Length: 431
Picture 1: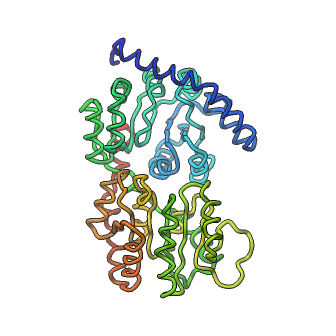
Picture 2: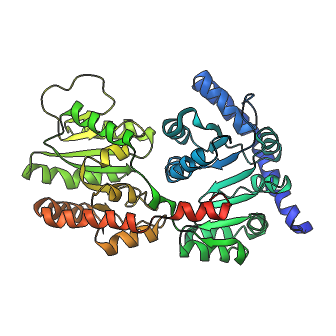
Picture 3: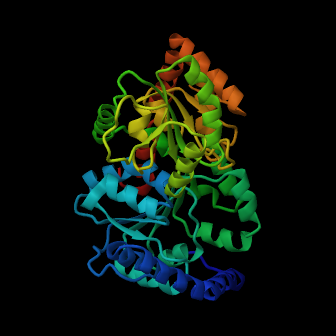
């Protein structure tokens, strides 16, 4: 076990003291959540304080995923663990309610979910004592000092899997080097998803022997039968068999307006086009709904229980979670959000794996290797504004052979880069 200097121990005490000052705010927030949500959700929220879950299964694997994207990326890894270790409990923690919903949707009762406790020593200690995991798996870059410290103290091996670290995050963490460097030394291994990420973890002070390039688990995604069944259901319900879909997935403000500005002129030239808008966060459902109403754009809502009268209008607002892959499978063209909005870009591999050519803005720092690989293969085109978006859509719509070449290129990229899960399981000693 590594030895910590007095300075390193003191740094974590200072960090924990900040959490202590925040406790009154956290308690008030917890009470608000109890009043706001139903009893089951509110009770589960107690895990933010290390409480609740009296009947939680002990041992096994604890996997932490920040939110929806990390849950989806880890799906195949979890499926492999369920098959190879059927006797072991699998606990998945998230930071968000949408992450929780995706866990329930993908795995049902096969795993147990909880919210990650606030990173205060008492909360972490209580929950760790309750779960007693044999292994802690943290996805991408969820570096919580007390979580890692108490796992390390209890000799629970900690692995950072599908490790991601952008230049922006690296520069931010370097300002906290006094806190981050001791944390990195407590990790058993860092499975980096790309060379950029490996190099940045080394810049932050990780042990060279502990950082291994395993590649990106997102390449190992699989489109489930449930996704395809949901696609058929949506297509039948909204009579989409003769429509050409452009799907804007995981959008942020102002990407919905950009899509409308590009789409409406195209729709005047080709009346069977349908724009599907899938906001990233549920709190934007109402915002986009109001935007469409104000602009007097005919649209339908995916969540609507009313029978659609007449033909499907020009826009479908997907105001439900967990349907993005199903909608991508129906698309001719996909725009992946968080890339015009400066959010680093979401997962371009989902549409690519389904044979859908991809458009994105230039904010792609979350997954630069993925985007660069897709772009070089001709499966992804980067755009700067609605005019460029409109022109590229028009080009693909008017030239089916060119669109098909881009679609097939994306599928090839996905198939040629699989293997990260096997690499990761080997590092974990579970292959």
